[in-house]
Image 1 (cartoon, rainbow, N blue to C red):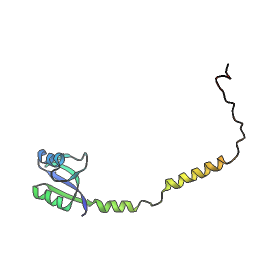
Image 2 (image 1 turned 135 degrees about the horizontal axis):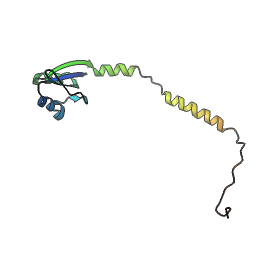
Image 3 (image 1 turned 30 degrees about the vertical axis):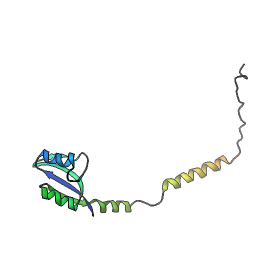
Image 4 (image 1 turned 45 degrees about the vertical axis):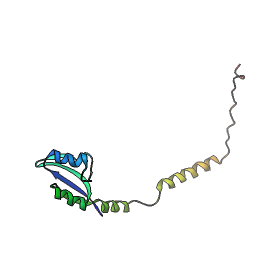
Length: 118
């Protein structure tokens, strides 16, 4: 069942507190969207059609916006399947190992021990 981005309108703060704080109606409320407007209060949420119908039946006014499942599928279609970080990392490893394969021209420094200092 598809999920929709919705805006829920309520007449008083107590009705919206029931929705936002108690979540009696099983709505996923989007954070920081609770606001006061001319006729009461509003909040944005994610809900399926059955929940939208239930909210409307209880007395909330609900505006349905886009289908978030459809929007998510369209967004994921734009994501590539290759792992570009893996390709870039393997190129760095190949380059660094080719540099390490050359013999080192520097001699190893002398090891300093406590007895050699006295």
